[in-house]
Image 1 (cartoon, helix red, strand yellow):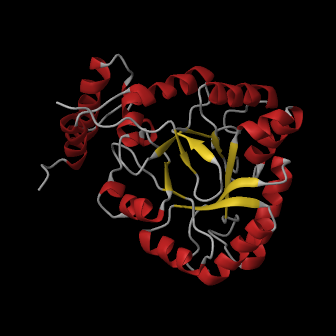
Image 2 (cartoon, one colour):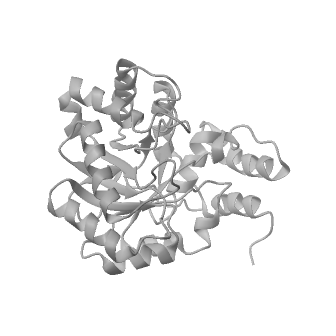
Length: 304
C-alpha cells in the first residue's frame, strides 16, 4: 500500500516572507519549570539544532493566577539580549488578549498596549507572528482589525494569527482585515479530533493559514493512556511507531503532520533531548489505512 506524502520541511507563514519549520517549540512551561536564562538558552539551541525555528510563547505564560504575567516572554527576552544572533535564526511568535483578572480583552487600547509590552519584554523590535490568544466576544472584529493593521504598518508585527478561534470568528476578523491572517492555533491531537471534522482545517487550507496544534500529545494522555478510548488510540499509534522504530509520542506528532493542511504541532517539552527526539516525526510515514485507523479509534465509531 502506498505511503502518504511526507510533511514539507518548511512552509510559508502567510505573506510575511518568512518560512516556518514543520514543528514548533512552545514555552508555556518555561516559568513553571523554574528555568534560568542559561537553561532556556540551551533549549532554544536544542530546538534550532533540531531544525525547529518557530518559537511560540504568550504574555500570559508564567501567570499563576496572582503573579507572573509576562514572565515567559521576559525570560526569552533575557536570552535574546545575551545572544542577539539567535533572534534572526528564529520565527518569534507570541500571543496576547488575555488580561487578568479579566477573562479576555481585545479593546483597541488594550491590544495596542499588549503588543508594545510584549516587544519590551522580548527585547526585540519586531514580533514575527502576533496572535490573539482567545477571542473576546465583546470586541468588534472591525476594531480589532484596525489595531492589528496598525501594528503591521508600524513594523512591530510581521504576520497575524489567532488562537482558539472558531471558523466563524476567523472569517469575521479576516473580513475586516486588509492583510491576510497567517495562522490559526487550535487544540489538536489524536485524542482531540474536532478540527478534522468541524471545518477548521478546511478553512485553513482555503485561507492559507498555518495550523499550529497546541497540546498535540493530548496533555500527556497519549503517552500514558488510562481510558479504553485512549488505549485504543495508543495501540493504533503503536502499530506505526513500533514498525518504524519511533516512540509513540513521535508517531502522534507525525500523524497530525500528515494532514494536507500542514499542521505544525507545538512541542511543549522543556527537555533538550525530547525536543531533539520530536524532530524524528518528520521521518515517520503513514499509509491511508494506518492514518484512518487512528481516527476511527479516536471517534470510537466506524466512519460513515
